Image 1 (tube, rainbow, N blue to C red):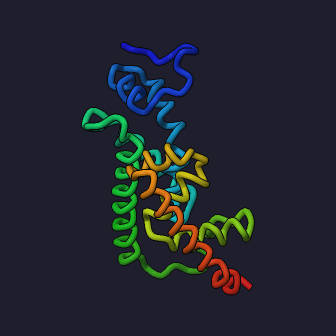
Image 2: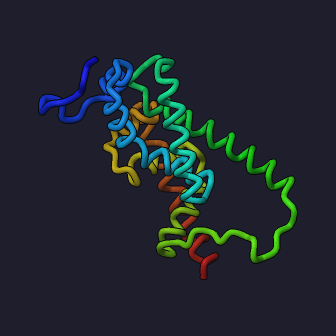
Length: 188
């Protein structure tokens, strides 16, 4: 079993970590989790709008990925593969919840769950605006700004060329700028 330890490996690549996990190093999967968990939670939050549900979905995504890691053809594309699992899991979650809503009987006001309170009006506004963007643009913003990845890492995670990534990121910025005045007026 190859263990990833020691000062010679400061930041192991996804490929190295995936190979280590497949060789039996469970700690390597912990490193992959630490690297991608915030991004996967953000993708799930975009679907659920609820932090608790997003965290549950993210855990499920990582469990599914771990169980199917031997099916990953290109270990360098672990991030993109993981995002694909997250999207699939989010679609399943939406379908299941839509069926539940169809079957749900009207609840009294006392039974309705109180949504998560926003930390700050500006943060909540930004979350709402990001949720309005197309999926690829949301992911570009999450990978670069919210997760703090370098452009090279962000574009690699999304599976885009450098110029393709910059185009998606620029479109997302422009859309957010266009949405900004509309949403500010809606809050006032």
